Each structure stands twice: as structure tokens, then as C-alpha cells.
Amino acid sequence: MKHPFRTSLSALLSACVLLSCHASAPKMVTGGIAFDDEPDNGAGVDDFGRPYIIIEGDTVHAAYLPGVFPKKLRPLDNSDYILMGEELGVEPAAIKAVVSIEAGGTHRGFYEEGKPVINFDLTVFRTMAARRGINLSKYSKSHSVIFNRPNVAKYGSWQKGQQARLDAAMTIDSIAAIHGTFWGMFQIGGFNWKRCGAESPQDFVERMSYSEQDQLRMFAEFIRNSGLLNALRKKDWRAFAKGYNGPSYASRGYHTKLERAYNKFKKELK
View (cartoon, rainbow, N blue to C red):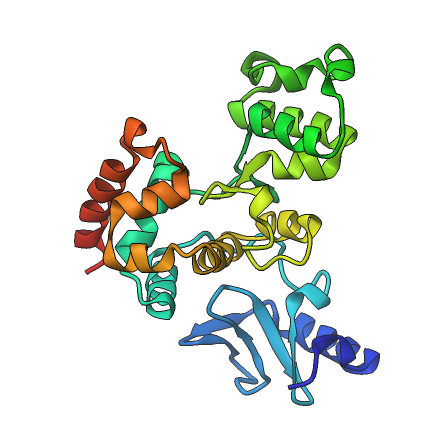
């Protein structure tokens, strides 16, 4: 298969015209989108909710066709957990259990469109900044928002307060700021960007900011590359919790929370 970027400009323009002409009345079919008057035009949606079109044998995702599809993709549902479970050889309920602990009751990866749920960790940020030779003490006044708990009254929500801290940290050093933040519905530390299959810290953030499907895919890459896949397959909650949450997992009851969540979702995902 050719790389999408090699598709000719004329073919892309034709695709834009074709999709624009039919976008008003699509009908959903198994495995993608068909259109009433032209069901074999090659348009579809992949397993992770990304619209695409096939042009002259090339698969072009909607990311390369600006304005054709809405930016916002659908949230994860049980079908996503089932598909990923099949790919990894893991019970879908085990994956959803991780989300329920990390993302809380909402089970969502975004607090606003394009804004992933984050946890800016000052301790980790300090460590990452020190490794990069940055003295944070000189920023204590000019960037005071970083060194205080999120100001909900000022920013309107905990997440917006965390975002303000991250934004300020990014102006000091973007790499340390990304590394010092936990991202998305699986709360993966930015310092693990390579293990998530990202090409760079910036790519990691962009993918975290695109969709919950991307967050799920990055979680899958992370547990593969961190040696945690077998523990999740076996539902060895202690081993998984230690690797995913750190050596103090037991004091927080992380492993027992995972097991309880798994038992709950196992009934739901039968």
C-alpha cells in the first residue's frame, strides 16, 4: 500500500469534492460508511473511528482532508474495549478496569474537545527539569501557578487549573513539562512517550489530544513495551499494579481497586 502523502493533489481534491457531495446523507453500515446513491465509493471508518477514503488504491485518512469530517471523534464504547482485548489477548473488562481507576467515574479521556484529561505532577516536573539542568527556583514568583494546587475558583474546574499549570511549565521547558504530566484516560506519564510508540514528546501530546481511540492504542503499546501485557492477561493485579502505579501501589490499594473494577465490568462485557 502506498503512503497517503504520496497521493496526488488532484486525487485529494477529487476526494474532497466526492465526500462533500455526499456528506449530507450518509447511512451507517457494518464496517464503515456507505452512501445511498453510491455505496461503493471507498469511504469508510476504521476500527478506531478514523474516517478514510480509498483513492486509486491509496488509503487516505481524513486527517489529510481538512474540513471534510468533524474534528471530534466518538468516545470509546464497549466495542473498542472488545476489539483491543482481542488484539492483545486480554479480557476487555481488564482494560476497562484500568480506565475506571485512572480516569474516574466519567471514564473519559477529555475534559474539553482537544484537551485531554491531565495530571500535572510538580514532583515529577521538578525531577525532569533538574535532569535538563533547569533551576526552577528563579521561576517561583513569575510562574507561581506551577507551584500551587490548581485554583478551581479562578479557572473554573480542577482540569482547567491543571492546564494552567502545564501551560506555564511549557513556557519554561516544554520537554520537562510534557514529561512531568500524566495524560489521558489511562494517565500515562509523558516520560513514557517512546514506550507508547510516539515519535517524539510532541507527537505523544498530539496523539493524546486527538481521540480516545488514540489514547487506547497508546496504552496498548505502553503495556506491550513495559512488560505488563502478560500480567494483565493473567489478571495478576499485584504485578500489574506494581509496574503501572509504582512500588507503593499496595498502600493505595491500587491492586484491589483494579480487581473490583474488573469483576464489575466482567458482567457488563460478557
